[in-house]
Length: 271
Image (cartoon, rainbow, N blue to C red; front, side, top):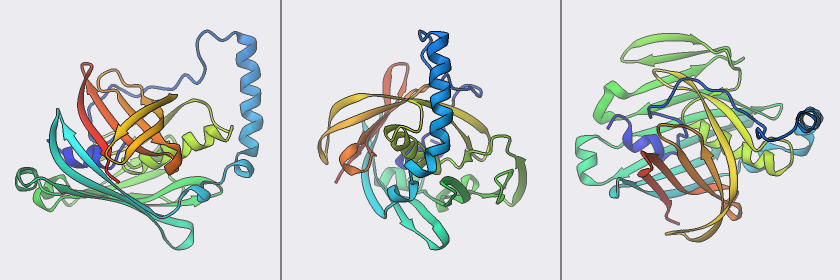
């Protein structure tokens, strides 16, 4: 139950779940010929140089707030709210709050997560992150990222640890959600591949997760019927599936976490 309510209430795309060791992404299908691979690689290099001109993440970071229902193996855990708000100096505050059912609140608490990040030269730069649960203080922790994203300081139970970051594009477990959404938008703008890998730092690990953009699918959620774009997290142990709504700026309207081909956790947009 560690961080159960928060782990996907906030679509911490990779936070708090068991998975395999660090993997790198294969950005191209295996059946492509070598000539096609070289041609596409050259195109991606050219597109990368035009990325900032073609795609501005700030245009997609508008203030918003969404509310979700959460089920664990078909049992309701309660509801959660995810909110994004602009801050000073080209920065943003990203926060989740939970409203669990009485049993979960009593036994586990009502955790919340707070992430602050900035946009610099078109890149998402993490600043601070906090996981807070007054009911279980031993699980609460804070991350502070160096300005150049070369290291992160983690404070938990009064102990301070400093970790070096090898991949400069490393994010906190909550910010990963927004990074994936912006990658999908970059892909649709023609400046990112249909598969990608992102690195997440948590309180006990630094891990890379792989994602792939799929097809459009019709899904029914409490907020209505949605012609959504499916995105898959490609993990063997607990794969995740996300359905993003083009009409709502590609925010997730449905999320599923699987275990042994069965839905373990499901989130649905309420309004």
